[in-house]
Length: 259
Image (cartoon, helix red, strand yellow):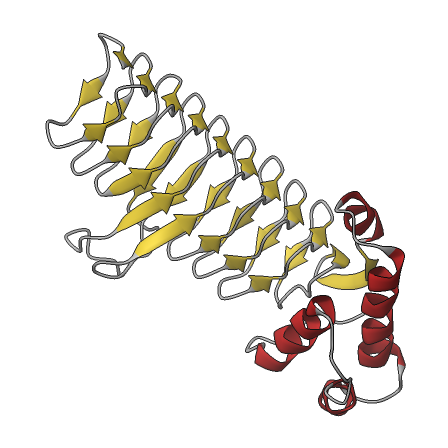
């Protein structure tokens, strides 16, 4: 374990012997930092934060500060959970939960670039990429392999589906459906995330089935409720078909419209 002489570490913190804490870092109470994780410099880790293995947290990131909510009581004990193999870049921020005993969560293998922000009670799953200055409000859920371009703002309680691609400067006010590309202010669906699906290795027959589901939802001349009735008649749906159907069926905010 390498802890720089200028770092300030609370006595209750549990830091793995292979972790590296750089100059001017501050680590608060009841913090856990796992094997091989690195805090580069001037990183602030607030109380009740768990950081897993082999994370790189770069200069001036702030992990686990209080939610930016006028009604939050800072005496409420809550925290942040971060998984393994994440890269959290300069000036990244994530806030702790509003609720006692609860956490804001970031999964594994995420790349959250400079000045990105994860607000309280949000969940970021695995392999998510967020580009410079993208931000979530509270209670946002971002699914596996989503790609969120720079300067995107995501409204509270919105969901972003797996393998969704959000173009730069987008305003997200509804749920972003899986495997889609959205763009605009407010955002609309402009097509499939075709490049992302090919890079992920999804075969052409699977991509075609995804496309057919979206044709039924957006281009069949019937409303979403009627389209879901038709789609639920599919015999032995593959995982991707079921993922889309369930996403639309369970949406509470409503799903982003097609352009």
